[in-house]
Image 1 (spheres, rainbow, N blue to C red):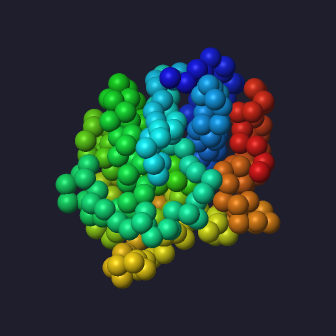
Image 2: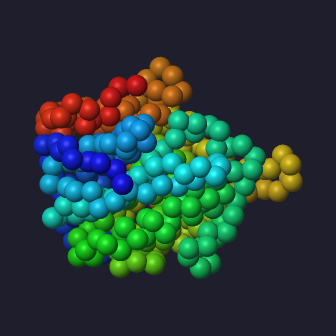
Length: 281
């Protein structure tokens, strides 16, 4: 389990106005969740799994997953406060590689019946962590809102988890914020997702290549089989250029772009301790 004894003075995540109804996009929630998503990278990069937990939150537990092999790596955590809970998934630095032939094929999304097909690479990772994730979620009080977040690959995993959680746990209305996430599934999966997960805000920089992957129509060069991909609902358009393909995608660029609209709130978040906010790439 990650050791997270250090705490910040980060403001507590706001409580949604009412559960069970779609929630309006909230810039401050987006900033706060981007900060939490950034800590999934710290958790992975630190050998001992250390990362920063916001003030008023405590660690419920962390989880691991298998990514493109038999080795398990830390892939995120669950936090809880008196007001809300947060499930956060880690992304990856090799985003463009996800379009390689094998993993860009599709597989049946098995956690939910008749849910269509989803990206095999993302689904394999989520499946390897699913039992751990659900065990943690089931420890949370169902009367508090559950936020689910992730950047890049983490956004894809957050999407896969959100439908599973909405159908198979007491949290029927998770609130999802993703950053620079790729497409996840076929039209059938997307229809069911959009009708089941009431609130999903998908922040997407128009100059970020990853949200355009996999392509809408993907044909396997080995089998000539055609796969169709769509995005889930809730696009929040952003537009920033950071001078490189990676700069347009990394979480710190999304964080900086959002903070430019709420500088005072951003200052409150980043004031203490050093390292809580995603650092510029």
